[in-house]
Length: 156
Image (cartoon, rainbow, N blue to C red):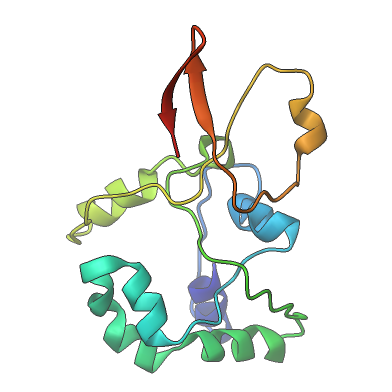
């Protein structure tokens, strides 16, 4: 969306195609509805969080850093709230928002290589009646277990 907006500013004809009813559905959900657009980590910390594949961002980061992104949006009137606890953003983690991995398929069709995906943030869904009361709640430093027939089968 940002690239399309910038291209339109430069008088290019732009068409945005979105799978959901509204552009940016998943982006609007990030950060507890505050909208994560970037992070404040320096390049070494940010690329290190991506493991051995983080170095592929070196050129892009030095051409257009997180600070450049914050300045870009600020210059267009978006008030930026910096939250040092924000750590990640999604991929194919939330299908209801259109985040089903189709972008990866399209990217591969354009000739790009996709490294193996690892979950970062994912939704938990339940039929329990109390769960809607937790909507928007950010839980830190917790342990979650899957219990089947009274036995913990997995924990993270």
